[in-house]
Image (tube, rainbow, N blue to C red):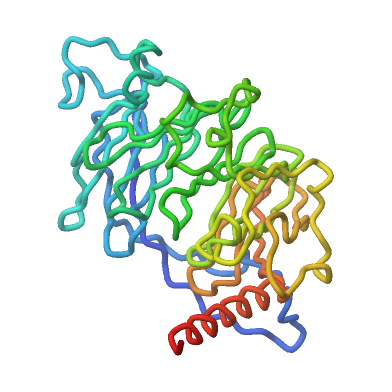
Length: 368
């Protein structure tokens, strides 16, 4: 009988080979064939110490470059191990969050907690969360003290200083939340995407002050319980969403409708000054078609879809921004195609001109 075990390892990627364009290559679009290139070997770095847990569900890296900590969502600890709660019965579907810290290249579990709802919600629900975990994201704010976890149709926040729940968003997408991301410049803004094809923006400062918002019972909610912004951008599930790492008015989403959407959300970004911001905005289905690039104003962005990219013919499962070029992003689809795109020139120009105008206004105020 073969024993089934789970594990996770860290590998270092080899340096990329130099790229050169031939005379027949287009600078705007180039398809690279990796089949004829020699395979580079990955360098083994470390194994994660998760042997005492039933399974490894999700892993997220620390959001700062100066830390190598990892946040892992794990299955229940094995009986007789350190983190197995004595005198309690654990469901095989229960989940635990473990913070791993590295020391001399080796990782160790620094803290661990079972995923539960906050306070009174935990008591009324009758126990720990057993829903499937779909995504985990580490907030870069407040010394990276918050980890967000998408479970089924809700989002749970964990304070890593106390390893206690800090917020709970219930039924934010129906039937499932697929991905989440924290605004890199505003510590209370969270973006979510799910199986309903919608992208939503939430203000976490209002969560927990009243009963949780639910799409199943919208009519009873107050304005502060609703998302700040919701747009039905895709005709199928949203699998991945990513804020721009510095220009938080830009956001990406990837979907199994074979498209990638680029959004402009200046009203809910750190560039909100001078923008008229409604309390709650919901785009109708008629607003899901992306505008032509020629229709985008360079005077400023409006909240909504800036561009819809349909180059891929399969479901798109991941999208992210380049860490080198701030105007480049890439996506990967079901059949393995890796597609690189750029932010449209008019969008780029509009953002740069807006920032220049704000800097000039600041200089004029200083002179006064």
